[in-house]
Length: 163
Image (tube, rainbow, N blue to C red; front, side, top):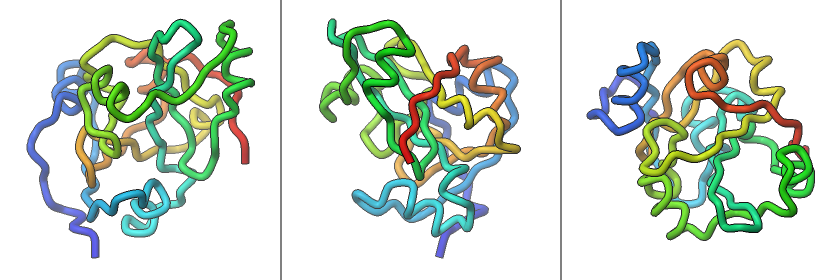
């Protein structure tokens, strides 16, 4: 069972959020390798559509970027490339994603990344009342209003979801 009220020590993501005056709730669950958003959603009792995954990708010039997507959707890399005006987009290999973000894969947050990267968010995420997104550690999600993604983080809305 999830340890919902357990406090987790600060991460670069929570430090960033506090520095920017963003209030958030903490949601701790038992991390399962390759469990993804389906596992965190199940343990926390929230719809997977409201659990947002942070994906580190790169364009054809190997420039890293972050895509924030519903947990129950996939990214159309063709639609994403078209939307952001590049030739192609592909996922970064786990070691490169970790090098760019400073986070372990499975614990990647868009906040407080090691390297500044362009951030894109699936536009329909912004229609949700609230979201859970990684707080910078495996087994640790934070709850925030989706407007934080565009208004504080500066994420640009795109339409690139596949069902």
